[in-house]
Image (cartoon, rainbow, N blue to C red; front, side, top):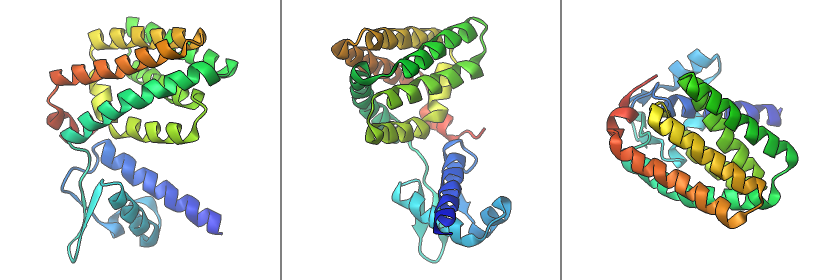
Length: 222
C-alpha cells in the first residue's frame, strides 16, 4: 500500500510539474487543490503533497492564508540552466565515450538518422521528439544515474524554449550536425572530443537564445 501511495504522489507531482512547464498553468496562477484533485480523480492529499514538493523545486510559492501560486521558470532560470547544462552535458558525453553499450550506441545512431530524415521533410515535431530522445540516451549512456537524473530534469525545465529553438530550420539542421559530431566522438571512444563537441552544442544553443524573446516564449501555453 505504501508503495502504491508513493507511486501516486509521484505521478501527481510529475503531472502538475509538466503542466507548469508546458504552460498550462501560467506564472502567478493559483493551484487549487480541490480543482486539480477533481480533474485527476483523486483526493486533495496527494495534490497537497505534490504542491509542497514543487515548492521545494522553486516552481510554486506557498503564500500563508492565500494559497499556492505558480512561480514557473524565468528567463534567468533558462539561461542559468543552459550554462550549467553545457558543462554537465560535456561530462555526460565524456563518460558516454567510455561507458556506452552497443545497444545504446545503435539507439543514438537511429535517432540521428531519423532526425535528419524528418528535418529534410520539415517534420518539426518529429525532429523535436528525436532531439529529446538523443539527449536522454546520451544521459543514460554516461552510466551515471545521478547525472542522468539531473540532466533529465534540466531538459524538462526548458522544454518550451528548446522546442521554439529547434523548430527554426537553420538551427534544426545545425543541431543535427552537432548531434552527429557528438555521436562520432562517442563511437570512436574519444572522451576529450566528445566532451568538447557536447559542451559546444549546448553553448551554441545559448547563443541561439539571443534571437528569442524568452519571456514571451515562457508565457505561452500549449
